[in-house]
Length: 201
Image (tube, rainbow, N blue to C red; front, side, top):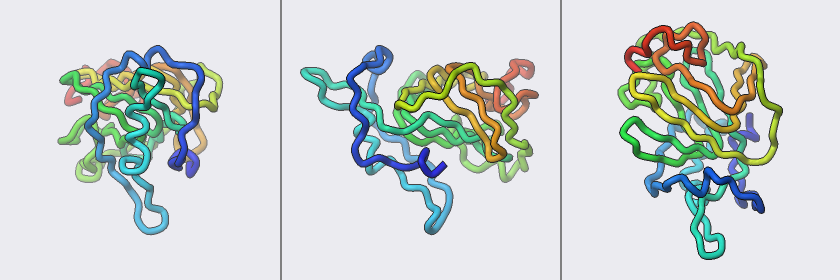
């Protein structure tokens, strides 16, 4: 996990371009990520050191999004949020677009700052084992990828792009698309089962 959270001082150069990355509208606002942990185990924010390089780079006469050398991963915490790292494009319910390398996403449905976690899972005593039982439908990829996460109003977090979903128990799933539960009521957490109307999402 340390590799997944490490910020590379010099991003990986790419000769191939992702058509999706050229078409995404760039929003210069930065995400202020929650940084859990204290002392020597404290995670280093990508906001100040590397996030600007994920926004844009000059490539010839164009300014395009540049991917950092960070894997797209989603940690399903035990009774806590979905912790996503990588080259993330977040499309909010109002249509605004944000780019980030680290997001802590609510999955209990009680956050007052949705889709981000604000630790309300502690107040409501959200209980979930963090199991990942879905089978991978994609092979592991080492090169940096981009992922787009869309917040569906009164619905799940839909994602498109390479994502390794894992937990601390060694379970993992690698997939290219899916829908993540954010109401806390799905029977297939962390995935949405569409059976509860996503009340409160």
